[in-house]
Amino acid sequence: MNVRITPADPGSLTLAVRRFMDTDAGAAFTDAPGTLAFVASVGTTTCGWAWGYHLVRPDGSSMLYLHQLEVDQAHRRSGIGRKLLCAFMAAGATAGATKMFLTTGADNLAARALYDAEGGGLASEGPTVNYWFRLSQ
Image 1 (spheres, rainbow, N blue to C red):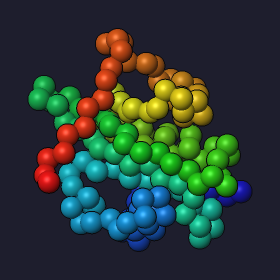
Image 2: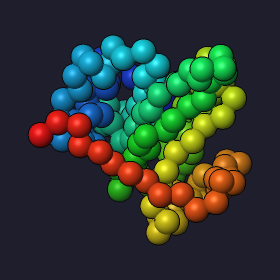
Image 3: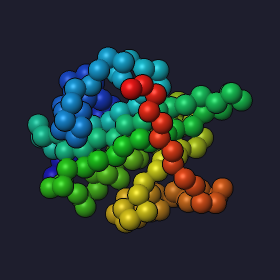
Image 4: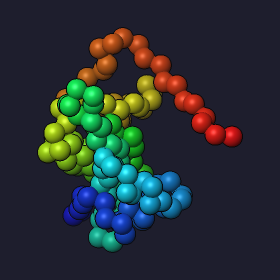
């Protein structure tokens, strides 16, 4: 299987967003400063993607936030997720980021095994809780 991981161009990003989110990518997303997205394909089939942001901090340092990494069920356990994760981290490091954070479900053992294998560690701040806020009705 020849897997190609590329920075998301408008065409490949459109395909990935439709495939994995069942919607269209808006210009506000694609044009946002710091947006990083990578698409995995096998031949002409979009089979995975990873996206998030390069965030500049007040002290001048920067870090990455990986919001989503998803691989099509038929292509899982073939290294595509690892390649997407590594491409995302490499792009962030090139941009100057020194850390990356993400959240995943405690029961998502496959994702946790990947993140552990690539050197990730659980947050040292102790147990964390995620909050979501609706900003408009």
